Length: 247
Image (cartoon, rainbow, N blue to C red):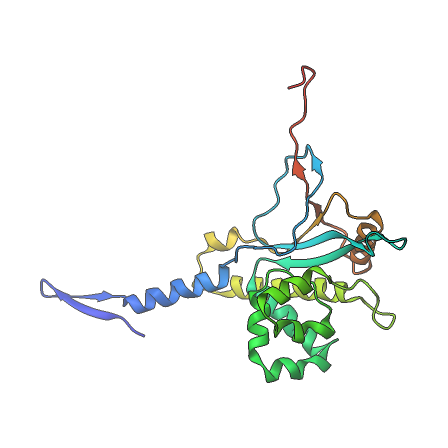
């Protein structure tokens, strides 16, 4: 695409075609867009008096939701189910591609044979299905997927003495954002002022329900520390402090 020339008052003026402008705008929005998080699994976080705000973008959200097994029986037990999410589609796509090419490459043929599975995955806002069941899960109806998601969660168990699925996902998601960030910064069409506002890495945010068993929360922290992730934010609901007069 080149420039158009328009003659005005016997002078030829160079004009940038609208198609060029639209392509630049579209490229910018595709690279910088975040999708709205419509979490299927929700938690009730405990209250605190901390006023620090969590970033609206560039977050890796770890949600821990309690669930009761064998309710009403002698074997009743409360466990914590772990879910992951982030706000950039490109980060999710890179993470899935990475896992299918490395630790879970035996599952790649299923995704190659049916491209719709990947599209469905990228439309999701939470990760919480074991990798071995992911392809079958993505082929179900939305109602079936919601029900199955609530009954599962990302696995914290070690795989053959190595990293857990949880750890693989965290590393892949962080790597995905790093790749997106480099491409964003290398794009010469994006103004430097816009680049300056973009965080250079994902912030890990942990949101645990107030009834989440401590043992699960402790395990999540240990899993993060094992992969050298020691910085994270704990999300709570703000509760205004009460003064001496009870206000």
